[in-house]
Length: 517
Image (cartoon, rainbow, N blue to C red; front, side, top):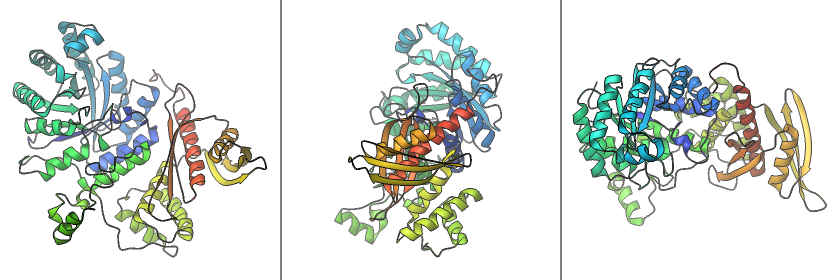
């Protein structure tokens, strides 16, 4: 193994999805997994296979699809968890099981109600059982940040002997300071010697996740567990983009250390995650925030005009933030120019079906919008790829006011080749749209969140609408996406998109085998 290479373990699809409101369906997870592979992530933690049939299905589908990244499933130190993980990753070219048990006194006493000997016994059995499914087993000492050093060494000895090749030391509650974690990692790296790779997984409860991760790297950790946009439980995790770019930018400190991340894919990856989850990075978020490479102060602007290095330590293009290209698209542009544009924007894996559908939408947009921006094109392509599975297709929407003052929505949708039409009144325009779609589809959704943002500038800007809808108490809320110059039309598309996603998941998860739990 190259001792200078830092393994990037991305847990956006597992820990990131545990962020409130960030649940994703299987198709969305597969799209993200392909982008993570393109980004150059070494290990993709695709989910917690034993958590639900949906999680098992997502991990399994990703395992069948991804070739260049190792596919990992998390499991507690419980036989059924490990079995489900093993079955889910079975088809992967490169596969890993990540199992864990808590080792801190507070967790062992109050959560596990186990003594140290019982914890070691459970940990050893978990690793041995996981090795019957895969050769690559990672073991985590949950709440390592608050665990006793001597006990951690005992656990490490036992699980390495049992077959674990990676030992992860999570600061599960984001409690430790960089110097504390650095000292802990340094001692345990020396103790493990070359018997196992030491990994770190840091939470951001005190805003120190990335600082902690970098300090651990400087002290010998050779795997970092991170998420795009810093998503994750509570305050989130160490952000992939921050940790990777810090290592790359500060080579005077991280002498010779490097990752395999293709950094120009960082911004496109961030945008895909934000679009799918509906959770935008804060504007001043490092690396991927809207203002990350903006300069408003007159002093800063003057310096930038003279020499960009006065106020920029990274080039925007290094992380995939490019200026508008010189090829201007309009209503007279052809398919070849459109294809060239999306290739230049990084969408080189778009299928012919997605291309043709996006091109048709582009021509319609060009008739209505004076200037088509790169952001418009990015959103057209992304929206098309997220809305391929349309059980119900929106054909027409008309909005009017009834004589009693209540708004009315008349909607036509296509289902199984038939055109269905209905109309309904509501207490507001959105309410009328949702009620009409509910009647047409037979599904009654509860709107939990609604966001509308402008894709670009101007009065004719595209509106991007994201709805989060719950259809039953047993399933997580479903995200729907809609895009149009007309905000209400985008709203109808987004709500119907949530319906389509819900139907798709129900069909996919009908019992077919014994892997359901």
